[in-house]
Length: 177
Image 1 (cartoon, rainbow, N blue to C red):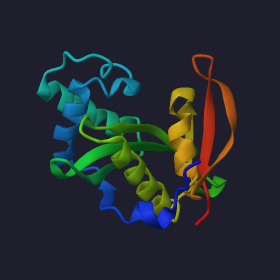
Image 2: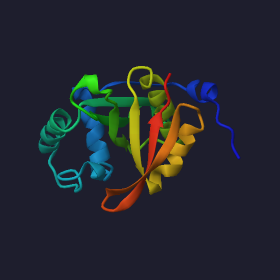
Image 3: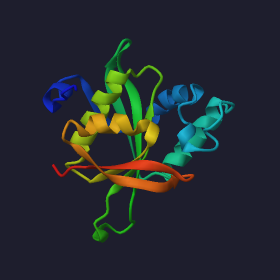
Image 4: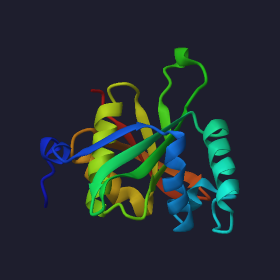
């Protein structure tokens, strides 16, 4: 059994910031690699022109999601944007104890498994100080989020049985900071 230490994982060079217009070029690379399928149509194919993609992607961020962050990590090609986190509020009224649902975590083709863990740990460790987060992870992604939870910043809180076309999803939430 491996031991995960928050301090050690956070010692690697990673950071995140709100997504900016210049990040669309990296999302394009993810799209061309088939990594945006979870966003649904029209991102589940690979036949959009770059200009169409940019307009569709920006519209999706404006209409569907309430927040988007670009994750950066040290890769074999230097310090690059290597992922996106897209979220939406659980309730439109902040007086109802709302939290943010993670709508999608998208990894760019050059992000290694190590980069993904380090960026996710950095993101969830820092963002939990601002807003509670909830992730509904497909069972194929459960192990990834269990690894994040081993850092003490997230916990599994149950299973949803009808969220992904009747397939179960493991539910994780960030711990209070």
